[in-house]
Amino acid sequence: MKPLGTVKPTSHVAVVGDLFPVEQLELERLRGKVVVIKFGGHAMVSQELKQSFARDVVTLRRAGLLPVVVHGGGPQISAMLERLDLAVHFEAGLRVTTPEVMDVVRMVLTGRVQRELVGLINAHGPFAVGMSGEDAHTMTAVRRAAWVNGEPVDIGLVGEVVDVNAETVRALLEQDRVPVISPVARGTGGEVYNINADLAAAAMAVALDAEKLVMLTDVEGLYANWPHSTEVIRRATAEEIEKLLPELASGMLPKMEGCLRAVRAGVRSAHILDGRVPNSALRGIVSGDAPGTTVIPDQEARVG
Image (tube, rainbow, N blue to C red):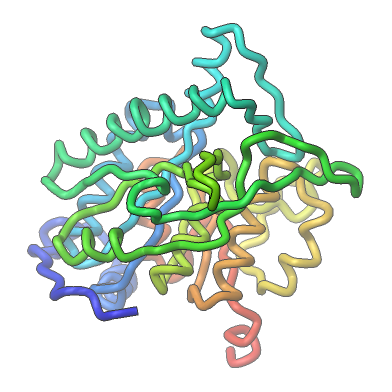
């Protein structure tokens, strides 16, 4: 990866002056580093939480970090499908995507959700630029199946990212922009695929040599013994997460799969955070003891 351009932070002390000293130190350490944030869950349907997230993103950029946002849009897609009287169906946590559903996915993600998020961020500073995985061949995908009870199930135009050409994203970062990316990708034959936003964010984090991958969701983190307990696993190695994958609920599975892929491919840490809490993105990124669940590489745990 070629080095990114010179970072031009503003006075981050004034911007985030209410942080604890350890958080200020982490903010300094992260200056010039890429952090990929997957924005989704309840935070996407609450106006207050969307505003909070937009402020967090601008705060991070003004402090000298290089945030990249990959957004979902599941609730908005489902709402539009219901309005159009099209079936809403999932297998293993993945949306079954017919050609008709794919048209709605593209329309909602890039035409509505992305535009709103770009506008919210730019209300606090002229940083955000919207794009999708289709643009400039940024993401290339192949068709994937869902696995149910050990058997593959056809789920239509749902893709698995097999290649990321991140040059356009890097160019935007060099221009002091915040890329806001919709998880839609092209196949090698020109077909368009719906990509799980968690896995798209993980692939982007790997391609950008990101320092951190952060996923905002609707729970406090990865529960140790769901549904019998709400105790959250605060820290886990990639090996520990891999052992848990077969037991995870469908909604948490792609998130932890994405975290696992990211840290095993060089991302220093991955975090599952509760997006229902205001400023969770900011606090989770700069906290030395981030709330939620943190996934680290196996070798880091051995060194520690």
